Length: 305
Image 1 (cartoon, rainbow, N blue to C red):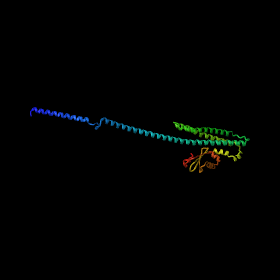
Image 2: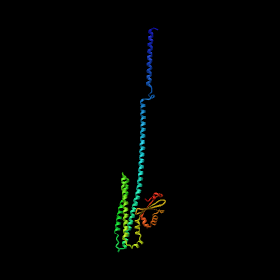
Image 3: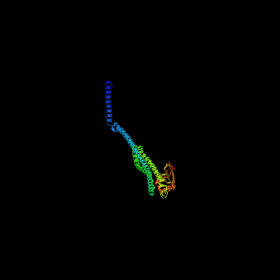
Image 4: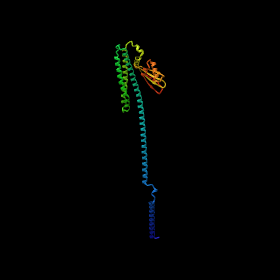
């Protein structure tokens, strides 16, 4: 084969190769163009899924935060409700104690009023029985006036105790507010002592002023003995328990003692006190403060200090 023929053949093969190569590339490009989009993940779809996952995580986090906040608020509400309930119980307990104290103070005032009236009646009887003896009860009557004036003051102060305590319970500064109630209670107790002293002075003045031959009148009238006894015994405080009744006796000099009985009814307790201390049942009843407890007694209840 000559040189020209070889060259011609090479050129022919080169042209055919170029044509085949071009056809192959074009076919591959056409296949690539015709390949479905769903067969491979799109970048935009991946980004969207990633964003959706991130949003879901944030939503769950926010939900947990809101749930925790709700539980915290519910717990706080329960605490506040419990505190309010405890405050109401405490207020109820305080008011119960104060009401009992006020009742005792009023009973003490009434008892001293009764004694004052008896002394006044005694003076009247002596003046009517001995009109010509020139009896002088000026000091006794003056002492009675002092006692009654003090008792009036005590009654007014007692009436202020409960409002003062109620105001203190609602105050933002209860410690300072309760001081007013404490001052009122201390004032009433001091006034009761002053009234009792004035009544003792009145009784002493009656004994000095009455005639020496008045013994016949005493045999038929125990008023003087009652008044004298009342200056010795100041108060009977009886607590009726389920197992016994304890009576704490307070004398005018400040002495105290404990008297125990199995009686539970007021009339029976009065009778027992009358027999024990040799005073009339009327006098014992006027000096008696009675409380009933729905429990058995303890050693602490027997403490008289």
